[in-house]
Image (tube, rainbow, N blue to C red):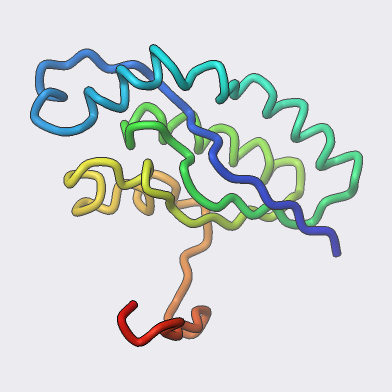
Length: 136
């Protein structure tokens, strides 16, 4: 069995809604446009899929930051990518990152889980949680 792990895909769609000024989303958009876009080039994901297929990968694990600002349009892009991977016969598992719950709304409405409903949900039985330090 071959397992691949990636993170920080950071799909991005700029939003210039005045409502964004009520959350930290405007900071994320500005940061993405001015600084971070050169690091997160999602066009390479088709090449990644080709590499996964070439290596006969069975499972792809994506840990966090599917999006840049937790915008629903960004989740649509992430879902399209995941669907390509699934269609290619590779199972996908994922966990949200801090950018996937970037706003209170995204966190409270569980937009990550609702938008990426094609990713299996973890149950309590799947997780083992243990404190690594008494104060953590």
